[in-house]
Amino acid sequence: MKILVTGGRGNVGTPLVKELRDRGNDVWTIDIVHSHEPQHARVDVGEYRQLHEYLKGSPLFDMVYAAAGEFGRHNGEMAFEQVWRTNAVGTKNMLMLQRDYGYKMVSFSSSEIYGDYRGTMYESVPLDYPLRQLNDYAISKWASELQVLNDSERYNLENVRVRLFNSYGPGEYYNEYRSVIARFCYYALHYLPYTVHLGHTRSFSYIDDTVNALANIATVFVPGDVYNIGDETQYSIKDVSEMIHKECGTGGSLVHYEDKEELTTTGKVINNHQAKTRLGYKQSVTLEEGIKRTVAWMSKVYGK
Image 1 (tube, rainbow, N blue to C red):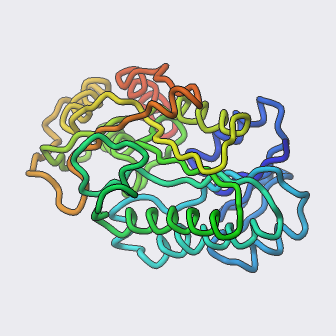
Image 2 (cartoon, rainbow, N blue to C red):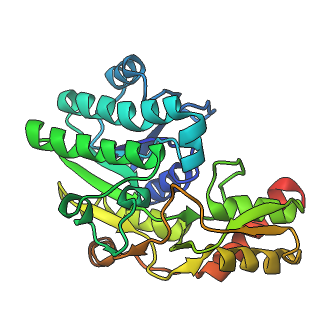
C-alpha cells in the first residue's frame, strides 16, 4: 500500500512510518522540517498551495495518516495562530484535496476534545452531550473533527478519526509544550524545579503500543470509525512525577505543588473497547517500564 504520513518526522509520525514500512508498505512523508530521506518533502499542511503542488507531483496515495499537528494547551495560548492554521486549516486543506485525489485518511485528534466531561469517555460522547473544550488546542482539534464529519458526509469521503490519550516514550525531544512525561523526565535529569498540579489524573500509552494500533488501521479501515487510543489505567500527575524522580534518583525536592490547573481537564476516564477489539490495542509496556525506557533514552540524548 502506498501511504503518506503528514507530520512524518514528529514523535508519533517517526515510529509510525517505521512500523508501516516494516509491514511492507511504501511510505512517504511530509513535515515542516527537512530530511535527507528521498521519500520526504518539506511541506506545511497549513499552506494549501504547498500541499497541492506536492500531491500533484507525487504518486497517488492509497491512504494518508494526517498526523501533522500543533500540540498542547500552553502552545495554544502562546502560538494560537500556528495552532489553528496547522490543526484546523491544515485538516481542511487535506479534506479539500481528498476530493481530488481520493485517498483514505486517518485524522489525528486528541483526548482534550472531551473537555469538561466528567464521565467515562466513550467515542460517542462529544456528539451526545454538550461539552466545553477548555483551551484553544482542544477547540482546534474538535473543530478539525467536525470538518472531517461534515466533509465526509457531504462529499462521500472515507475517513477515520483517532483520539490519542497521552502517548509518550523515547523519541519525544524536550520543549516546554511537550507531554507531561517528557517534560518531567527532562526536568528531573537536569535538576530543574517544576510545578505539579494536584487533583489531575491521566491515562498513558507507550508509543509502541499507540503506533501498533495506528498501523493496524491500514488493514481494518472502516470509514466513519473513531477510536480512543490509550490505556484505561488512571495515574495522578503527582504519582507520575514521583515515578520519574525514583527512576532518575533525584528525589522530590525540586517539585512545587499547587492546586489543580485551570482550563485543562481534571481527569480522563477512557473507554478503549473499540481500539482493543478492532485495532488490537493493548498495553504491552507498563507505565513504570515506559518511564524507565524514556529516562534511559533522554539520558543518552542529553548526556545525563
